[in-house]
Length: 313
View 1 (tube, rainbow, N blue to C red):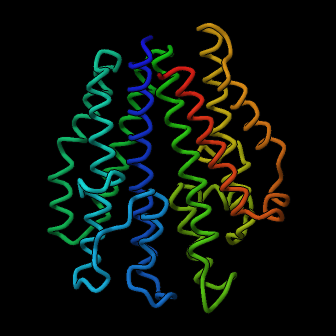
View 2 (view 1 turned 90 degrees about the horizontal axis):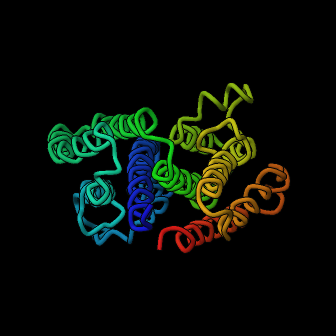
View 3 (view 1 turned 60 degrees about the vertical axis):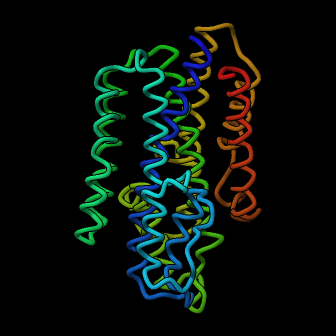
């Protein structure tokens, strides 16, 4: 496979995962915005989506009368924001179109239908002042695309590069989400353990579809250290860091078997997987969750860079 083709498939999957992740974050931000404000700053809870998505600072005056609407447009459909939903979808489609021959008919039609329906769905959402149906549609379309990928794509190098992109992006998002809640959205006046803290953690679990799984494993109200364990070290969780890194390692092993052996990125993936596999939630919390997550993000980015050098350039 040409490295250019592998690169397009890799980034197609990353942008589709980014699209779904931001839709999930926007839903959580909307729910949090309905809670009594603890910071004294209007729209403060929307920083969850801004920070986790890595979007540049929104060029919106703090005293703008319609700041909420402008901020939402910036996150959803502003072409000036490279991290917006529309920008991610547009980049996914560009990469998909470049490797149209490597995609199945079902994958391309799913991607293209989503792109063509985006504008009308977004306009209807703004007209009705109802964001939830639009975000639900984005998540459904993302699930449709991944269903087509899993159900119709041959398990060859193309599949491996697409799934590697998916899991690297997912791990990055989960780590950022945990760090933002733990380090940025800490409740102020009422302190950690208050009702506002409880609802924030609950919505973080909702963002990764893990609230039901949390209760299945722990059978109690959300606790920060147990949520960290669930989203970092539980390999049963499809959005946990351990699960994502393990999937990347397995996919790289498949590439090594089909191509010309292991490369530098394979060793980096194994090292990162071992670090996660033999960690404990207690050690992570004791050493500092924020610092640990920053180290993981750096290692995950380094792994992505090594994969790019070894296969995609």
